[in-house]
Image (cartoon, rainbow, N blue to C red; front, side, top):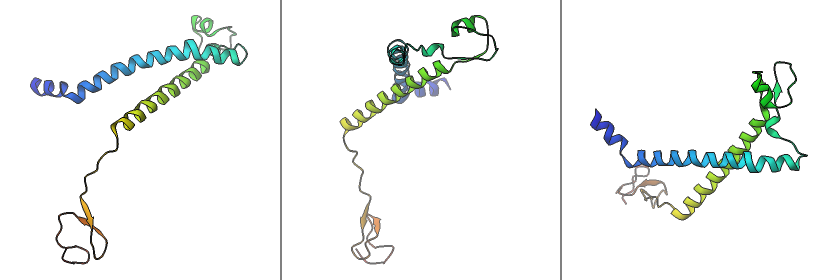
Length: 141
């Protein structure tokens, strides 16, 4: 059983997936930092000095000035400002992944699909390439 697990774990695809996962997690941290520390402050400044991290709905009914104050008091909150930042984070990651996959596909070139069928010269239907008689019109090829 250990031998089978070792063969599975050390297969090329599993190792490549593990590397991609680690790089993806690190890339996600970079994007999250870019959104929280660079993009959201600029967006907040353009919208009149808004701080999205302080957009929250207090469910306890007590008034708090900031989200940190509400969380320190243990008040239940709906943090829709942080949710907006997370959505922007996701959009950036999705866009970057789209660009990477698109460039990879362009570099890889078109995929050659092997020809497995041909058209019958009499009835023009697709038949296997090795066929010597058409199964539709029964013509000898």
